Amino acid sequence: MTAGIERAAHAYCPACNPDPALGEPVTALCGATHPYWGRRERPVNNCPVCEAVAARTEYPCGHTGGER
Ligand SMILES: [Zn+2]
Ligand SMILES: [Zn+2]
Image 1 (cartoon, rainbow, N blue to C red):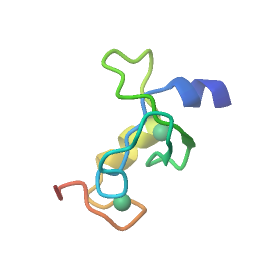
Image 2 (cartoon, rainbow, N blue to C red):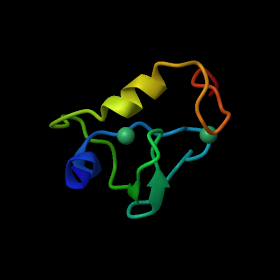
Image 3 (cartoon, protein in one colour):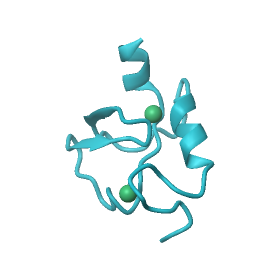
């Protein structure tokens, strides 16, 4: 389960992680923290928790998804 989440396509808060370096631990919207290895263009599976959180207007960290 953990490995599945690790490999899933997570969504990140662009305000908290504007430009994560490769290998830098980042926390996804679902709360999972793992090294960032770039965006997956064709993920095997999407993290359902991240998808649900990303659809909301406000993230748990207090930022809003609409801000850029
Ligand atoms: Zn996630
Ligand atoms: Zn944030």
